[in-house]
Image (cartoon, rainbow, N blue to C red):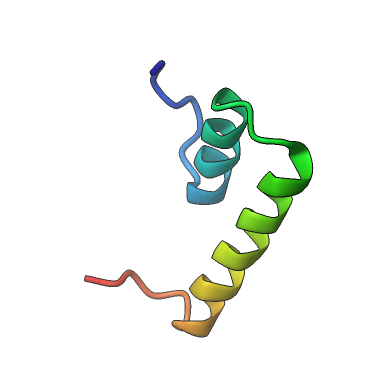
Length: 47
């Protein structure tokens, strides 16, 4: 896989999903759930 160009997590996720040929709607759904997960945990790093 080529290296990711973006620095931000959700942009990296979007870039990787497109590289793996996921549909746009599937990518939007995955990003939506990821955003909810991040917000639920108070936008803190899990470590």
